[in-house]
Image 1: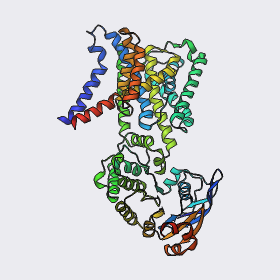
Image 2: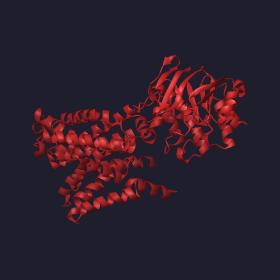
Image 3: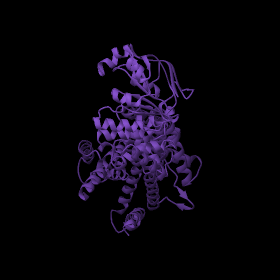
Image 4: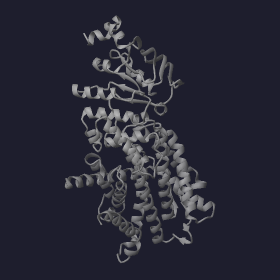
Amino acid sequence: MIETSDLRRGFGGIKALAGVSLKVAEGERRAIIGPNGAGKTTLFNVLTGELEPTAGEVRLAGENVTGRRPHELARRGIARMYQRNELFDPLSARDNVAIGVAAAAGPYRPFSSPPASELVAADDLLERVGLGTRAATPARALSHGERRQLELAVALARRPRVLLLDEPTAGMSPTETARITELIASLDRSLTLVIVEHDMDVVFRLAERITVLHEGRVIADGTPAQVRGDTLVNEVYLGKVVA
Amino acid sequence: MRRLALPLAVLVAAALLVTFPIWSVPWEGSRYAISILRDMLILAILALSLDLLVGSAGMPSLGQSAYFGAGAYAAAIAGQRLASDDLLLGLGAAILVSSLLALAIGAVAVRAAGIFFLMLTLAFAQMVFAVAFQAADLTGGSNGFSGVRRPMLFGLDFNGPDALFHLVAIVFLAVLLLVWRIRSSTYGRALIGLRENERRMRALGYDTTRLKLSAFVLAGAIAGVGGALQAYSIRFVSTNDVGVARSVEAFVSVLIGGASTLLGPVVGAVVVLFIERVMPSYIAFAETLLGLVFIIFVLAARQGIVGVVRVAYARARA
């Protein structure tokens, strides 16, 4: 579904991505782990088109989409749950999602109010992420956990084919973490998921395959069991976290 | 009954506004009031156009007078060159020229955001001002363009001050209706999305550059309509109509009245012209008062008059 080959991106003298090649199959659930500064967020920024790679290629469903702009990639089915929520703060939860739902039909409808069908679709999504009773609440008035749930609903609003999840449980309490993890686990199996996450319990709960990044390179790639047994991975990453 | 109360009140208010020259006759200040109110409505149209950018889409433009002036010159010059009194021709020319100008300038300006967008709009407006000043053959340059032809429509003559007021009031109401509809539309909500989080808009698949450009052109076209009315009102176009002072007047109207509210720009335009044009007859240093009022709003009440009233009303009900 999504494939990168020898992706490179530098910032000044720093190589954030030093040749990343990976291949995520349709419907796969892939976790990308690695220490801070490994290049995970840079990789996401390249995959969403927010950053152009210095070299290498990104393919989405077989099409070369390298250098495409974010809205073009979104239209081709890429969505992202940002690590720091990207919401429309003063707008209601419903409107936050509805703007996403409306994106498919486009904004150039200056004389018609948002159609009921779009608002119903937004409410359905809110229901699914557990915010059914909060539809009318402004995004800024939601709790941190609820804002993460809303961020997920907004990311899903355009019915993406690939969903990039950037630390979905960041800053959450154990209860909230468990809830959003189950929420993600319950997503449609046809949706391709790429998850960046530090919480290894969450990673092992969600991922079918794990890619380990270190200093902008893939140092391991395999099933959770394989990665757990990899000595190099234990040395640079897991050893410190899982003990 | 209660559901009908608001639309009914709006209709009555609209009718009272349009017929102001008729029912205000007994009042001795009527003639003067008609001309002031007319100018307030024209500034309100400009401010409404600007608020689509500043309030809704979060694009602070300081060059809105460029499109206002372009509309004024376009209506005046089209009428003169084509020897036509047709109101629709004048308004059409104003809309065409101002939106094309906005398209050309916007194509560059919308690539910047925030303070840089503001500086670009200002710089382009200054260029438009310079052209209006220098192209004396076309615009009359520093002498201004005099002898704007009176507008006619279907045999109706809008030449007299009363008839002209009716025209301005009707066009103002049409613009207000348009802006009201846009604000509650899918498009209007997308503009708010731009203001609140452009990154999220892009990630949802919105071409934000194009969306901003569309708002810029729409605002330019509405400003152009205001400019045409200005040209018809005083039958004269001066370089002041494209000058930065006009842009600032509109910007201050939006901020004092309340950005991102339907009536805020209108209330602001009334307040600004009241202070600028009426107060000087009664007190000294009235223009200084405008600066003071502006400072108070920037420091203490950024939601503007309409915003403050709305909050107070919500509190009173709670």
